[in-house]
Amino acid sequence: MASAANVLIAGDLVAFPTETVYGLGADASNSAAVARIYSVKGRPTDHPLIVHIASMERMGDWAGDVPEYAITLARNFWPGPMTLVLKRSELAGDFVTGGQDTVGVRVPDHVIALALLEAFEKAGGMGVAAPSANRFGHVSPTTAAAVVEELGEYFSKDDLVLDGGECAVGVESTIIDCTGLLPRVLRPGAINTVMIEEVTGLDVLSINGVDEIRVSGSLKNHYAPVAKVLLCEVPEAGQGFIAHKNIETPSGVIRLASPGDDEEFARVLYSALRDADARGLSEVVVVQPIGIGIAVAIRDRLARAANGR
Ligand code: TXA
Ligand code: MG
Image (cartoon, rainbow, N blue to C red; front, side):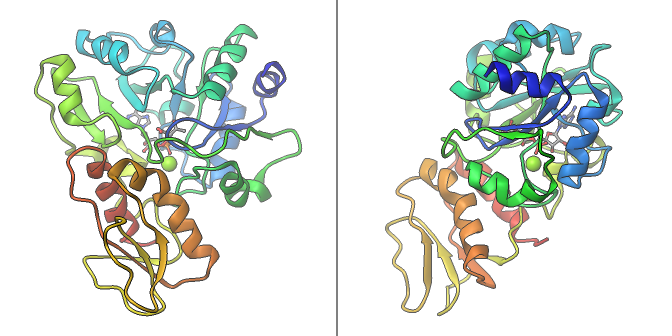
């Protein structure tokens, strides 16, 4: 971990596992290192990055004017699959925030991520900027092999990929805008609206007008595999199929995943979509989960995947 932290300090990239998806990390206070994230991902530079920190004590380094309810959220759900969008401090440069006056901050819940962040802070680092470790618009990686498949050809010899196995959650963190009087969910994830309302005692607003604040994950055609994703259709022979375990596979259809519950659905979804591409399938039919917990995040990502690349 100390040597991985030194890779970051030197201005190189470290891809690392989190509980949601793999991140592509760089020193968040080094503009040249952060610029490499954008080129390796092929992402437009006006899209903001999330700063990952080892504990909520670091929140004040990156953000100012933190409202009471944001502190409540941090206490309850960090480390965890939640990103808070806050008024930025001086430290949060335009090259991390995409020029906005806010910054996204998160404490991930993964032993390797936390050990890396702690080693980085011990070596003098302030925070690690990390988007999902995929090419812009593609499906996020949930294994180290998927990171290498996405970005391998763009890495330099000093960059590093840490292998922490399969991500436990499987879809990206819930993003909550904490700059208004009430929390507002910009991207649904494992921390859902009911949980946010329960701990804050506040009404939660849902996404609206996000285009103007450039949440790239809110683009209509994000998270898409090469294969065409079809929702609300009956699968035909030769098509891929992803559905809950209790739904049968029609004959000739290629079953890619059979999750037993919504949590497993989230965990296996992205690798199943990658599998469709690996098998060269042109179409995948997905029966969406109907729940109100993490199923909301799954339906959100599927709707975008269905819009194609
Ligand atoms: O689970 C996750 O959040 C993963 C892991 C690696 O932590 N990261 C992730 O990063 O999904 P990324 O860059 O692929 O998606 C982060 C989203 C982007 O859509 C970005 O626009 C939005 O967060 N975002 C970051 N900072 C923001 C800000 N200040 N205001 C609004 N949106 C912001
Ligand atoms: Mg992403």
